[in-house]
Amino acid sequence: MTTLPRRLAHLLLAFAVALGPALLSAPAAHAGPSAPTTPERTSAQVPDPLRVGTEGVYAPFSIKQGDDFTGFDVEVMKAVGERLGVEVEFVATPWDSMFAALAAGRFDVVANQVNVNPEREKLYDLSDPYVDTAGVLVVAEDNPEGIEELSDLKGKRAAENLTSSWAEVAKDHGAEIVGVDGMNEAMSSLKEGRVDAIVNDKLAVRNYIATSPDPGVKIVAETDDQAQSVFAAKKGTGYMPEINQALAEMEEDGTTQAIYDKYFSTDNAAPSAWDLVKDNAWPMAWATIKVTIPLTAISFAIGLVLALVTAIGRMSTSAVPRGIARAYISIIRGTPLLVQLFLIFYALPEIGIDLPPFVAAVIALSLNVGGYAAEVIRSAIESIPKGQWEAAQTIGMGPRTALRRIILPQAARTAIPPLSNTLVSLLKDTSLTSIILVVELTQTARFAAAPTFQYMPMFALAALYYWIICTILSVLQDRAEERFSRYVAA
Image (tube, rainbow, N blue to C red; front, side, top):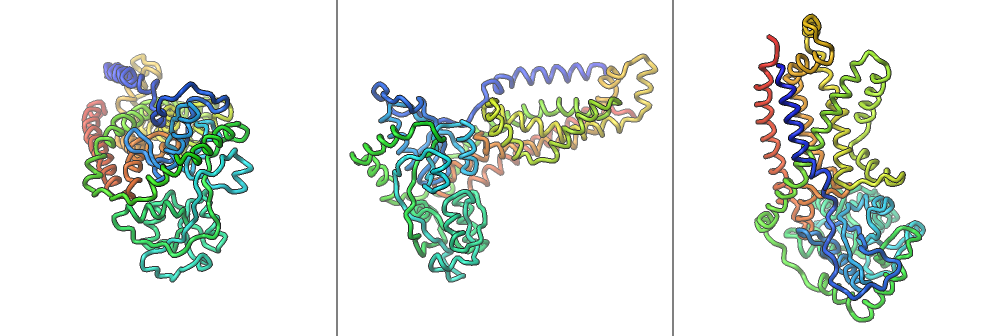
């Protein structure tokens, strides 16, 4: 029993040395390639590089393929950057956190089919429109509700992104809004009969119908008003005069029209599911190796240290450490992990604490593990008979020495199964970190599926990768239980 803590300490030290560089050089949200070489910059206001927030999963406007970003909005912004003589770096950001990230200074401009409306005009600096489109009313191919025009939406269920302008259009016509994350979720809900209709951008819907192997939906009407897409920045940045000048030049010389024709004048054949899997199997595996596994391992190691300290605090006879430990556990267990991620990544910059995405994810996940695992460790320690403590004191051991040499090795056997469950849950919880710009396995699967809306093969592959890792962890759990069984008193 005397050598076990030393072995554990050596193991943790080696683990920290091996993974320390990964934490210090933590991968942030991917930044797209720079614009082509341009003449000396003449821009006085627009920053260089210009960081641009975009989804990467909203075809055909914003698509992330491998290490590159493409799509109509992306290419328009690249052309703007080229004319201004600045590099353009793209940051993959979910739409629901797009403006929170903009407010937190995670990037400078949003390029993601932002439509003009009075509320956004008050809150943000908006560019001149670079494309005009309209909304369309979409129903299932068999149209069981007989919806033919917008007035028919009254009392019907419409699948919409809650923060989009199209949700307001559907709501204004009496629809009951069912919140979804994106186009694919909306279309799936419509085809499966969970909703009755969708109102969305005409160009995006046409692209979905053209590229999806089995669309199963149809357009029955258009909205009366035109939707104008603009770039958005924080109020008072002063970027827009220069961006507007570049957009005007692009409109005049036909650059914008050429980009438009590239994405909307021809249909693109969708690849087969097998081709999609073959092309993306390694990028998804690499995202697992590079981000998901290190994020899980580092967070779990730090979380175990926090859990042990918290568990000891909970068992303290002093009211102060016991109260602090109780408060920490209560806060972590009483708030969702998603909220914790938002607070650490988007709220802390408001008080001057600006963390990279990977580091913010590690902190949030570690705190979460610590809060949950603390009670596991405490219960395991308290399961050891008091006679073990008394025997240690009899031979002259102090409480700390007894805990380290006698109690913890025996408690580890009891704690391993629930801690293993915590580790497996942590692995799967890493998928939530995409909301703070971490591009891990699940987000990579979304990027791969977005251009063709074939989410089933991509998420099936992601599920396979998660299952393989969880199976390996189960095997390691069994071996660890066997190893620690030797330290349990008969």
